[in-house]
Length: 371
Image (tube, rainbow, N blue to C red; front, side, top):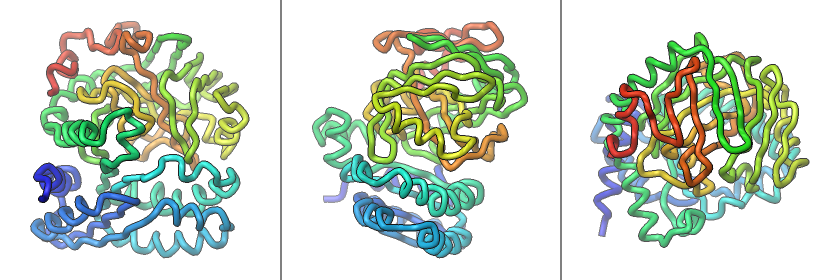
């Protein structure tokens, strides 16, 4: 029996998130699981007058490709994928990984070859700036296990999060967007964390179900050389198959001058990918009312109510701070009381304390007002 929630999600994705128009091309890319959703997306795309294209990929097979690859091989693959991506007006990526650690045994130099010569030219250089795109997960046993939930409970959680009224959230974000765009100095405090930086002159972008599902953040970027201080992230982060914990970064003139974690050598190899990997490309505030704890999946964790993320690597074209890199690593800090609390200040005015907005005009973003 078909789950009606899948049909509703497909309708939301086609008609709200990417808003397919007659004659437009949509690439649906499925990783490991999510064929039921892909079928519904094809149907809804046709109803909207669009042309669906579908690719089904396996992270295990991709790993086998990457482990034996070289630069020329990756460029050959990416050139084919790039030509197809150039013909798309929209993209939906369904990432239902069966094993989040599948890539953990790929050598760092091979991952770097993949990131620089396949991922970046196809996705960072073409998909992100030139299509209307939406990246999402699909519930499966592996994700439920990562979240510490039964499969049934995780599916209920997933559809609550993904079928939220994002148009309501979009309107509620307007006061924070306006405030961020008037702000110069930001200060963030929390356990073993004290950061200052400027966001002067940079736009604030609302993320309300258009490019990610689940969604719920407003992002900008720090002035590239303005970041000072230190941060100790209090959520684990899975990156390229390995789970990092206790990540601590120290900044001077915008640059990460010291990085430690549960594997300090490994994390510094990531930050040595290129010059931009040691600068920050994004600062974002998470507001999704249904996501309250980390599950080692960035697409969910970066939206946690009461969190922010501070992202080493490339900035987005919508909010360019001049930093370019092959990496973009969303690292999350939760400021709710159970995670040690914390404060966000804009130009010496407290705007959020212990995960809750305290300014009257921002209270619409507190969780009870978004559900």
